Image (tube, rainbow, N blue to C red):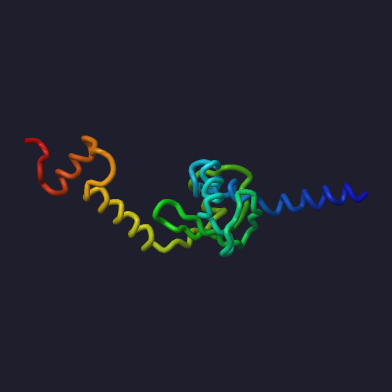
Length: 140
């Protein structure tokens, strides 16, 4: 009888919680589950203020902070989807409490990086965008 009780308890627990990496992937916080798991392993994801491993249990009401590039996203778990959801449907399972200023600052930093000429060699598209912005021509 004890083994059946353990199975029932395990089934009830699995219905109430989900793996962190799978949840992050299913609500589209990361493009792949592997990226979500890697972010967890590198300490870029916290659950209720504590670093969490990819297999950590996620329950409704928990606050997850996930660093995604330049942005520290603050996500509140509203529900546990069965699988990956479409962008419109994913909003039923997560509430994004990331301040709009964080997105604006990341966008501005990206623009400054491009304008400074940082990174790789500019593509034809990049050169044309810079030319439209500054009214200069790279051609001699």
